Image 1 (tube, rainbow, N blue to C red):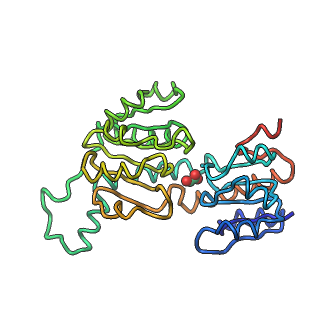
Image 2 (image 1 turned 180 degrees about the vertical axis):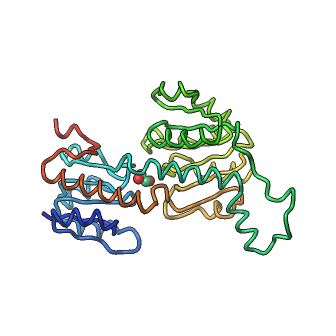
Image 3 (image 1 turned 180 degrees about the horizontal axis):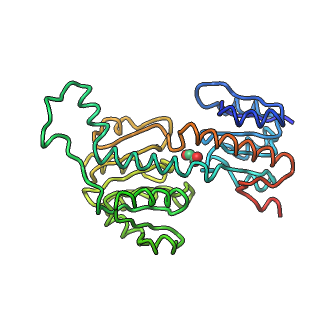
Length: 319
Ligand code: GLV
């Protein structure tokens, strides 16, 4: 059997694939084009795509692939219902990237609040004239309210970190989590979270329902001193409205790991001082990317050998 990997991934994942299949890897230094993907995946039984590859019905039909093992926890790049209709198993990589993503979320919270990027730039530009009681003042975390939108694995891991900073933690989610509530983490409505948080951080999947979850109305509800942090998917935020809000200084700032139309960055966002922007690095630690490669490869092996993969996203195909 042949499988196609749409970009070089850590070797430990490729080794697992090579032990089981003939493996073709796209070696380009930017995401593969749709045409090239179809050409290379055609005739392969399985594909291991990245979140940058849109795997839709047309690709499934043109390539004839029989299993999709996404190298990400988010699966908004794969048309799951089209795969299910074709009884193609789809898998993702949950769990292994929870801590790395929560760590990066916290790094962004710290960076935007303590003005790390701005301060680094200030120093490199030779502007520092010596210690100054009023230079580059940021905000404390103790007692500040962290509002977590979406309380799955990553949202909870962010809450754990915030507990160490003695923050007041609130969350909003479709489900209630009583164990965490017993530890003092409070469930609130979406509106209350926006109105009362000093930091709003998004940890929800991107779906039709979460498209533009944060738009003009929601931004207007936020405190003028609040920060917005996003390490989930860019389209959860109406980016044009966010830029307008930031320009008008209606909120204090934003720290973003994900963008509306990656890898393009809205030039107006680059001009703003009150933002920290980094290139979609939530899971980007060596250990985590290695684990993601291993479980994506194991999922693909299982799926193609007729075994139900551990991280199946559309289990109904096995019914
Ligand atoms: C990263 O964004 C992922 O979904 O794994």
